[in-house]
Image (cartoon, rainbow, N blue to C red; front, side, top):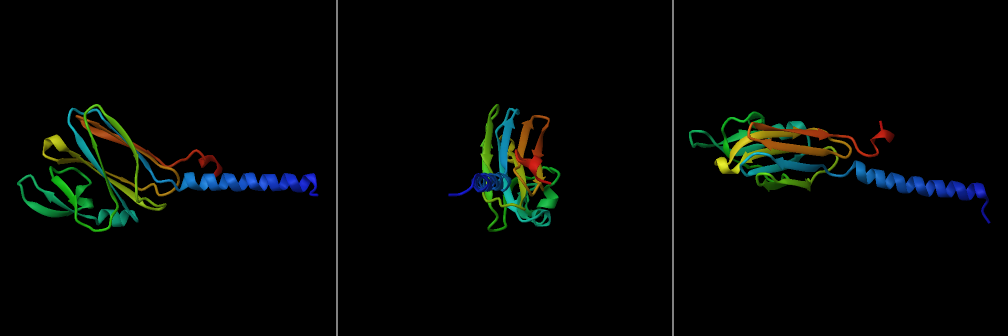
Length: 172
């Protein structure tokens, strides 16, 4: 028969093992995205996950210019909206996820294809304004549970991101 001390030690080890498993899942969980549309038009938010910020900035997109010309642009050229329309990724094998959000609606989703260390890129287009590119967000928070939020307004939009988790106080 085991002593009380041994039994107590085993119980503590089992609890710690269960806690570390749960904490590991929370820390490595993919980002959640909440999009709130306070504008009066429908928007599309497209999320991409790539290995790092450098890879993100070199992503290639086909865009339509103000003059109606179709050409290639890197993400670094899309950081600031410049009247481009129909922004379409041309690179292969980059996990992509789209959300279409109507005026007055809010949607929350988990970003698929994300693994710890990845960077998340968001391209926002106004669908009722000829698919005009209005915003680009690059989220470089690469660790722990992430919460991303984009609010779309007629004056442009805003957003925030958080890299902390419910177990962040335990970790450096």
